[in-house]
Image (cartoon, rainbow, N blue to C red; front, side):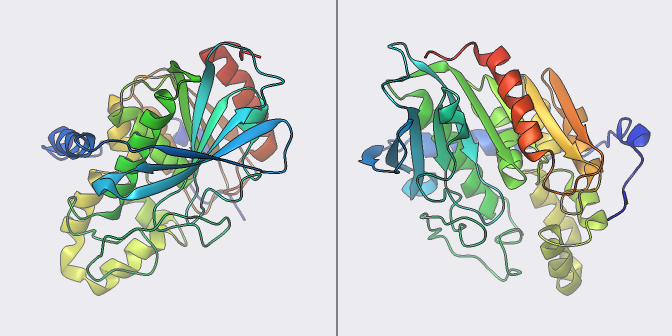
Amino acid sequence: MPQADLPLEDLRRYHPDLPAPDDLWDFWAATLAEAGERPLDVSCTPVDSGLVTVETQDVSFAGFGGDPVRAWLHLPARAVRGDGPLPGVVQFQGYNGGRGLPHEHVLWASAGFAQLVVDTRGQGSGWTVGDTGDPVGSAAAQPGFLTRGVLSPQDYYYRRVYTDATRALEVLRSHPGVDGDRVAVTGASQGGGIALAVSALAPGVRAVMPDVPFLCDFPRATRTAPGDPYGEVVRYLRAHRDQVDRVFRTLAYFDGAVLGRRSSAPALFSVALMDETCPPSTVFAAYHAYGGPKEIEVYPFDDHEGGEAHHQRAQLAWLRGRLGERDV
């Protein structure tokens, strides 16, 4: 595929003035305060992943509305970790992916971190399996997740997802084997967008790694991305022609290029210049708006896969510089 978005020199200058709702932070403060009234209700059950270098627990905790959310907690095996508390990484999943099988996502635990791999409610039937339902209903919506409840920020699907994600951070930070002051959040695509939101909404994030993030600069994304998931919004508005302003007002409460203005932790972004899922201009919009110290790795000839193993290598080196050496 060609580089269909702006040239790199223009991307480095692309900084749209995206409007934030007047009650944006009051909305999120009220949402998270309501969630905080419920106990986390964490349960952890050891499971045999078949791996000898990683110990895994099946985790459940109370997310938005008290709904149970599932995750895997991976820890370096006792034979290779020291006695001190571990730095941690909370990993969020790409669109319609789940936490997967116990052995699937273990990179950060293998590198010496406590790793919490979190389900996204209602997802996990695309490229990896999930175990968390979304019991909340929705008005008329396009197939997929992006337009569920989109006429109101109170009803919007990602209100529940972002709340679950902030609770997941709290789960890992409160674990007795984890140094709660050294916890990072990360994810690719949708996971990167969720990580950006958590960095803005939750206290205690030490570092952020949004990899080719989704859920950023909705006005441009819906007008330039040639396919799904942003195409779900396009088809919805093709049918609901009288709801354009209302839809984009809702989306502004969840836009990583709006929320990230309040983030302060160091961040390592990635962008792929041939990305047809998350146009690179939307990633640069989030990058330029991000409020904390930031770096970005550019992959000129990649689509939505981004830098893959090459970028993981960069992330490993970068994160050790932010969280300190692993306690092994």
